Length: 577
Image (cartoon, rainbow, N blue to C red; front, side):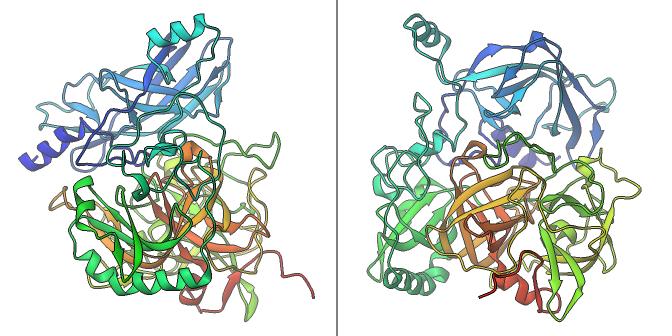
């Protein structure tokens, strides 16, 4: 292991590394997360054998069994105390406690319950070594962890509040209530739907505190007005004129036409660090500029498993698990992968398509990085090939293997991510041939159902929804259009501090309403079809994001560039005039 690799890992121990938490790398700040009640005695925590992955990484799977006779409501988090090896530590955490600094892993989401006698299989956990081990870490490995129920206040405040007869609300993770104060105040505007106040305010996310109108308001704030077409046209012109120059500024990774907190439209710029904000002007060609500190977007396939399940507000008590094996024909929005790609991973099989010139030709639509590894060589130095079997579920949801009858299609066409800085990719898409006997047109029962075959162009204030492998059913609002983004697509073996990136242009940005800790999507949702809440009209193909925002390719661009160019979503036809 190189010294540079070791130093990167050591620095990682003092920061929130999970992709579900937006932080500034230049100004780390403690989040007010407290352990609350220790419920370890009520559960059995087990793990699979430790397996060597690539480089300095090791994988295992965690399982929690509630052995008590009472339900345990979320959020429940795991704190890894020992791994049997002093220098073998989790690579990423979902959050960190304000006191003590221990990182935690989400076990049960805030809106879920670990029922009595229930066993919950968690994600695949990645551990890494800081220094080259002298012995094999997989030998006699034993992990020790504790399970806590998160709270918003320290124990001393909890006791005081309980004496006064006040409730002690559970902590909302960053992005639910925490994301409500990204601008440091309750009176700022937002493009996000208001939600009830969940209780005490968490600390603003690092790098976004006290920036006034430079921030995208919070979920408590009134919904701003929608910009006029003339405003949007003016903002789009300025965005197009300045995107290339803004990307020349170190720290800039996203430039878009945005819906600003005051209801105007302007240029939105995402930068990596708080210090980078000072490099960006307040106006460009007379158009306002809104600068935010955000982590760089990543592709949203997963090699680490889901974090939790949001509650579906539309289907009553119905619940289904998109990671399970489905009898054929499979629904859309479920776990899937390319059987030939050497990786324990998965994404989402977004929808079924049909050829308008031959309706008997059916295809599965997903991302290229899900079904073709973005046209790049896998760990076995093999490239995706036409005819590769597409399987359901993906291997990470089947113990890193696949069922004998898991094939639902054959890879047909895909895009390749070009990583040179002067090239702008338009879509991340792939299709596989299938049949109605193998793939249906509807989501599982806790999804939105059958999409329309009539697409819709994204615009500000457009309310959308999706169903995906990791976060299931979520709703959101379009906040960015005409987005040019630098997306992390892979690790860089030559320099782990400089990941491989690709530029994507013409993308759509969505923020969540209030689902899944405030996030519209998570790793594993790549390939999901995003549709309008009114009419289920396809809008985009989800492919990347960070905790705050999700990006999608415009669906009309996808359908025009992939395959024969004559494809449409196979769904409900347009009403007859």
